Length: 206
Image (tube, rainbow, N blue to C red; front, side, top):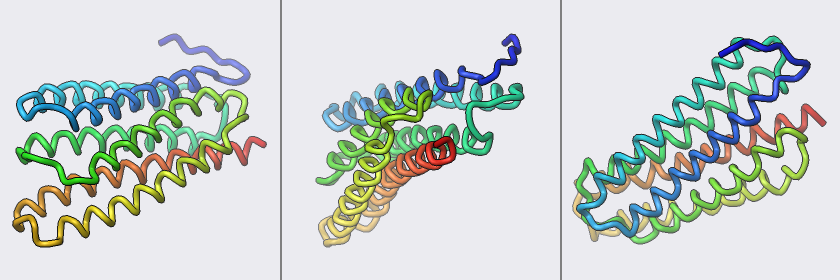
């Protein structure tokens, strides 16, 4: 990559958008997993791994650009935080899919589809928000809505835990399913971290 010093390095915006678009891909794979036959799950997991690797590449590209730029569009620590949080989302989504396959889960508990729907909506909002970092406009509704979605995810998660501990499942199955729903909750938390970082950046740049 040829180094170019500009008054305000703009390639970060495109890289953040690419990272967020990849998260949308991951959320669609989660949705696909819900309706997939048991035999099709391994192939979905392979595609999710490929998307997660693409996310890692996008994150490394941002870090490389950060380390080779004298002037950045906003604070370096915020660029690092935003890139890391976006990467965390993809990691958690990939982990959830991988656990479903590794644990050979026959049927996901009712309520997981609501978790995944929340993640899919948060992914869409995040992808829509990233281009607005260029102008720092039209972002307030984004972080307010993502925070609302995270609160909704918390409620869904608590109901899922209550369902898992109602005596219907044996102890080993509870452990497996709880780990999956916990990881999906961590993905929701990571979306909130992204939104909070965007809010921090917008306040600093206002």
